[in-house]
Amino acid sequence: MNFSQLPLSKEMLTTLDSLGYKNATEIQSQTLPLILDGKDIIAEAKTGSGKTAAFGIGLLEKLDVKRFRVQTLVLCPTRELADQVAKELRRIARFKHNIKILMLTGGESFGKQLGSLSHQAHIIVGTPGRVLKHLNKESLNLENLNTLVLDEADRMLDMGFLEEVEAVMAFAPKERQTLLFSATYDDAVLSVSKRIQKDAVSVKTTAVEVANKIKEEFYATPNKLETLVKVFAHYKPQNAIVFTNTKVEAKELAENLVKAKVDALAIHGDLEQYERNDVLVQFANKSCPILVATDVAARGLDIKELSMVVNYDIPHGTETYTHRIGRTGRAGAEGIAITLYNSYESEKAEEYQNGAREFLEESRLPAVTNFNMKPQYVTLVIEGGKKDKLRAGDLLGALTGDAGLKGSSIGKIDIYDRQAYVAIERDFISNAEAQLKSGKIKGKKFSVWVL
Ligand code: ADP
Ligand code: MG
Image (cartoon, rainbow, N blue to C red):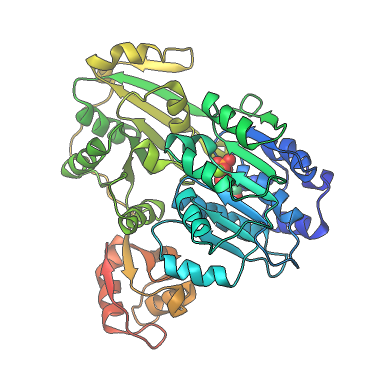
């Protein structure tokens, strides 16, 4: 369906066009008419199907910009996800002026959020715990709320946010539209829906969507680490996420991979927020090819162009499996999903037998000699960011000017409030670091280090 077939404003259509969103995705064309019509919905569609824009377009079209009060609240399970949602909303809101979207998530200064809230906002995107804290302290009020969105509702429940979500609901007016989005849903989600929604219309697109092109292979092995390195050596993926079932394992596996000359970082629940961010930035900007993750830690990451997903352990349940491997093979490119299992797991592995999945002999993978996996880039951190009015252009300027690098040696640049990350080709990193350390950016000296 083309967006112009929907009752959307002209400015919205122009924006979508400028974003390169030509046709509505399946979930968008099925939910938008209902959302615009004020219905409560419970929508299920797989990861990457454009759920954010589905509710984002709807809520932005309904927003009364002149009424400078919180009209919409979007709850997300993690800070990264909230950040992605806020970014997508800002992109879609581009052509409507003066829409204020505020993020309220944990791991950030409460005081700063108090300051921002005192200046009001139209839309809040946040995590349940932090939003609730503001509601309890009366720094946030939802009197004017008319739309409430629960994004990744299933995950929110998995992570134990039910109580907090319900407590937040108690602050919202009864007359409101409640939208529930999820990659999967089960009885728990349905029961929450019953309690917080009115006559919710259920929309499910999982079945009609074209399946991702994913090659699924299973290997029985007594030595998973060795097999994993063979898999990497054989397929040479650009990047991969390796899932483990526990955070202890995630940590250990990343260390063991590094010992086996495969550059890897782990992301799990024990990391501080800044450490998480360091890891995610490095993976996304190609400074680390392998990310070892637990399901919780990886949830909601929108990492594009993932060549491979590995289940280092058989996941607990086929839904988790589907969710994990759905991260590869997006946008038409073929992805590879590898699952390793040992003799203790062979019974569980058998439950995964179907026509599409290949159960292969480990011995078909060639022995590994002299293999290593190194990233294309190395990340340089500059202790300065948006608050210091640093822009990507300033960093590019400093690096290509004084430091003498070619623009082509510089990869992704991420600028946060107080820090900036620049991906630089490995051969040029020491030169870049030395130059930035001795020189100035925008006339100012900043601390600089290599991650
Ligand atoms: P989900 O929440 O369903 O996992 P996202 O909302 O994160 O998916 O969207 C996945 C990607 O698809 C994003 O990069 C988004 O910008 C893009 N996208 C969303 N809607 C469209 C569209 N209609 N056409 C093209 N790309 C789109
Ligand atoms: Mg999403």
